[in-house]
Image 1 (tube, rainbow, N blue to C red):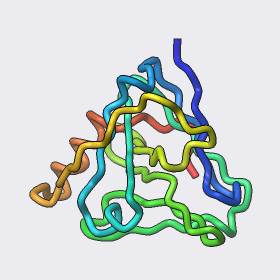
Image 2 (image 1 turned 120 degrees about the vertical axis):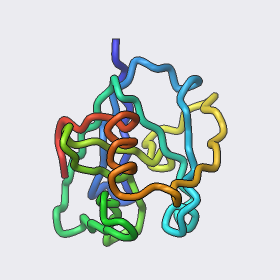
Image 3 (image 1 turned 180 degrees about the horizontal axis):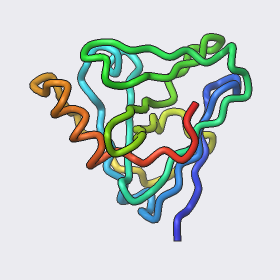
Image 4 (image 1 turned 60 degrees about the vertical axis):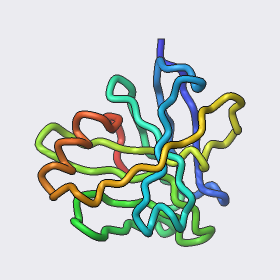
Length: 141
């Protein structure tokens, strides 16, 4: 059975619900080493068998940012500056990675995040990886 976990920016204008059957103690966390993720100290997780739903309370606060290979939209709040996650469209659908620093309720026992570097990927490889590893999106921002 999938459990639901909620995250949002600090002011509550943008958020997500993550549904997964994986217990938090077994989540695989990654800290991407690109300059954007390093500067936001991200700790992201995904579950290809789970689901992600974005909720936008204030559409004016949602900032979509693309950089590098332009293959994903990174979602931050214009008001409080929090990065909540990213999503990407591909031939197989829409997929997301969620920044656990945005969890509304901190969880005990979450493993440490592993530094990860994706610089060697071209756009096609990046999209394939995301479709196979990221969480399917049921409601996009």
